[in-house]
Structures are given as structure tokens and as C-alpha cells.
Image 1: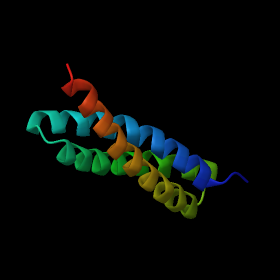
Image 2: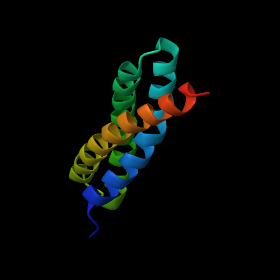
Image 3: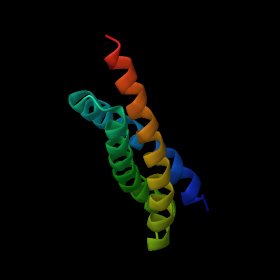
Image 4: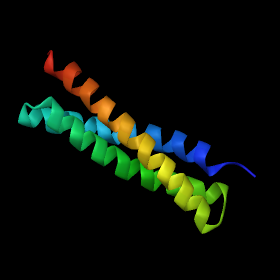
Length: 96
């Protein structure tokens, strides 16, 4: 049986990075505050990454534990990538 941690972390990191980066970077630009944008990017990334990873975790291991484990891994990965991506988006758009 496949491991929901591996798949959940991968999906959560990817989804959380995209959504957290876009939302957090733009919030940071709107407020002219990179740290606040990164905080929001981490929150949005963790939420969206955890949700997507819970779905994948359940598909990989179709019992509630699969969703819990996959979602947990995805939330952690999504928060980290969302935080980082928000800083990258902020810096990239601020220089223009």
C-alpha cells in the first residue's frame, strides 16, 4: 500500500506553495510589508495544502487515517512552501 505521508506532503507542498505564494505575496505588496505577506502565505498555504493532501491521502489509503496523515503532512509542507513562495513573489514584484 502506498504511503499517504509521501503523497500528501508532495501534493500539499505544491498546492500550498502556489496558493500561499500568490495570496501572501499580493497581500504583502498591498500592505508594503513582506513579513505580513509571508505570514499570510504560510496560513493560506497550510490550509490549502492540508486540504488537498487530505483528499490525496484518502485516495491513497481509503480509511480515515489516510486523510488524517496525508492532510497533516500536506499542511506542514504547504505552510513552509507558502511562506517561502510569498517572499519570492513579494521580492519579484517589488523590484518592478
